[in-house]
Amino acid sequence: MPETLLGHLVTRFSNSPENLATESLTFLLNHSKSAQTAFIKYISHLTTLFPEDLIFETQNRSQEDISIPDFVGIDITGKPLVLGEAKFWAGLTENQPVTYIERMIQTKGIMVLFLSPAKRFPTLWPELLRRCQNAGLRSTVQQEKSNMNIALIDENQFLVLISWTSLLDYIRQSLEFAGDREMLGNLIQLQGLCEHMDTSVFLPVQSEELTSNIGARLIQYCDIVDEVIDGLASENEISLQGLRATPVRTGYKRYFTHNKRGCWFEFNPILWNKYQATPLWLGIKSDKWEYDPVARKNLTSLEMEIPKKLFIEEKAISIPVFIQTNTEKMEVINNIKSQIMAVFKLLVDET
Image (cartoon, rainbow, N blue to C red; front, side, top):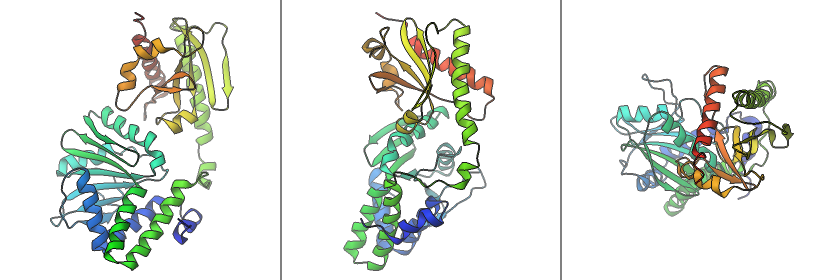
């Protein structure tokens, strides 16, 4: 698709492309019966039937919690049935998705819907499921595709991740069939915005990034690596003999051995971007520093978890290690050490 005016202007004059996309989408849904019918039909076939008429509001606040979803679909009685969040590359807030799901449970709504670029699915979907799991919400994945993921949460609520492209293509077909040229032109503008955000290799740097504490935080991730490894070594859980810390293009590694296996703990932004929402990773190889099929077999339970917690990267086992949020540093360090030792416990049985 050729670049549209909206797609051209968004990264130059908007600090929040998500807000602009949300307002554009809700404008279409509230001003075009064809667009609204297509949207409702699309989400209904994923889960359950929605009423034909919904009113869409943006930035809908609740008196019960502090969450502010990007948009809400409300029925004629004023009951919210779907909470929607528009994402391009912005991170999840503390409320997402758990507070949204809890609000839907309380109001007997149906769905929490996230829209994002398809390229972001491999990291965003596992993190959404992990947060549900950590909050004690049972999730049953019903479908995982390249442009549409669905999970049933606690048997009553649906958590859905849809790509912007698949949804807007579906609405576009409806507008074309209805001959609604005015709204079709508006939709094409929104498609241009989403395509620009989806295909941007380099996201424009915002001044807030350069003046924030991002630099200090990256250093702190490396410090956490050091403190965790030094702590495990002092407790005789691992050996550092003959090995040293190594700064690499992908971040920062501390090599060690455990039960003769070659291992490392690292700050790795590439794996962070590619697989799971954490900058810290545990790597495992054999005693000869080669791919270890025995270790992979013993760690099958991690590979089968939802979301997945074992990946093969460059002939090595890579396991995400998560950082507790809103927690003092010492508790963070101890929790990470416990996660690493839990992995090694699974490797004890070598038979």
